[in-house]
Image (cartoon, rainbow, N blue to C red; front, side):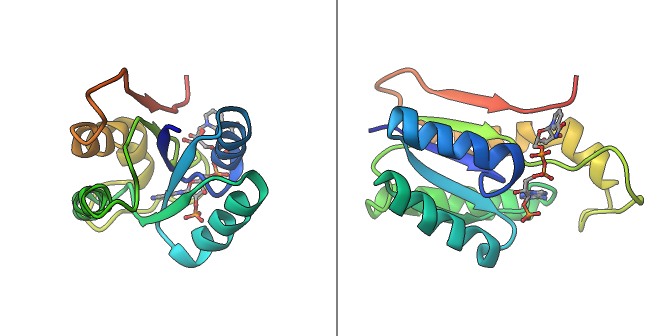
Length: 144
Ligand SMILES: NC(=O)c1ccc[n+]([C@@H]2O[C@H](COP(=O)([O-])OP(=O)(O)OC[C@H]3O[C@@H](n4cnc5c(N)ncnc54)[C@H](OP(=O)(O)O)[C@@H]3O)[C@@H](O)[C@H]2O)c1
């Protein structure tokens, strides 16, 4: 079965995508989110409902340090067999275009950072981990 990493796969559109991947393709999932307290219960529910393996990964897509640390953790998950492969990455997590202005830990305005940079650091840091033996995908979700 393929393994798909999805950022923000525990809520909103991302959760819909996680359910679809698990139910339709029986894909194992890695749910990446900034709060494991919010991610873990959803991971457990998805795993029980669809009989797939669902791992959790701490990742704040607005922080380069967090992206690098998540990529390192991902490598360890592959090395120790927690996940068998990494076949696709869905860069879903983001922020809405409304609401108050906020800045991430690197000093970038959050929406700017998400909309312009999020797919590239996450995809770039983890794409090399995707299985090379068969086609793999990195998908970015963004406003038109
Ligand atoms: N909804 C729409 O109409 C619409 C239209 C076009 C495009 N989109 C795009 O589709 C994507 C999902 O939209 P949505 O409406 O489902 O958003 P949402 O309901 O706000 O869900 C976003 C998910 O991403 C997580 N997340 C937010 N910031 C994060 C961060 N810095 N690091 C890691 N995870 C983070 C959230 O988890 P926590 O808050 O628990 O951390 C949540 O699970 C976004 O990229 C959005 O720009 C949405």
